[in-house]
Image (cartoon, rainbow, N blue to C red; front, side):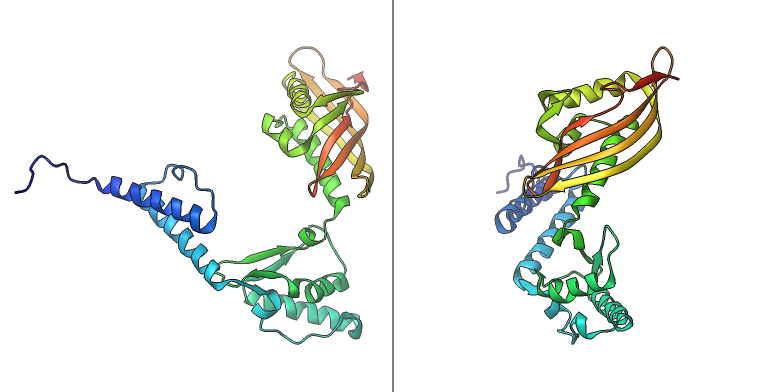
Length: 281
């Protein structure tokens, strides 16, 4: 005899249980960290999302790895030194078109000579192993600088980003873990990254806005053996405090870096406005 007091299962509860199982399988089978529910998605939408991820990871795992050259069908090519400049440019376009047809692209942060790109593709990227499986409609990107870091470019970019975050009053506590070394030198003192971050926050909060007039990098130096780098930048900006007259700060900003774990982190800086160099507007 059926128990009329039994409460029927809620479909949403059943889906939630299935979603929990999918998250657990992703963690156990594919070593993915799946903590908690996925945002505020409805259970049925989250279920499809998790199922698609699991199916994709399963197919990647089963397909294994393959060299880029094999995925492209092992196309014939000539060594760079056997090609004229015109031939090299034509061959480079042919290889790029073949990669694109197989859902692969090569990106660059900076400009390089055709010979550099051709040699990289034929001598390094061809030998690189990647997932043999690629879902239809997806595109796989390779970035040249991930294989050959451009330290001059990185140091310039980090310096300008650092200055820009302050000028736009966007510096936040979480940035210090991304930009700053654990130990910093500021105004001749050794401080923690969090203490320097508090100084930067106080500086920008003391002003309603900043007007950047000049930010020109003048010199970049780095030594990978010592893991040290410096960037000198000529800057000029107008700072508008909450009360009183606006002030002009200008001069040379020197930013020092440590190279740690394949990343450059700021370990010290001299900043007009925080270390002098002010004059009334």
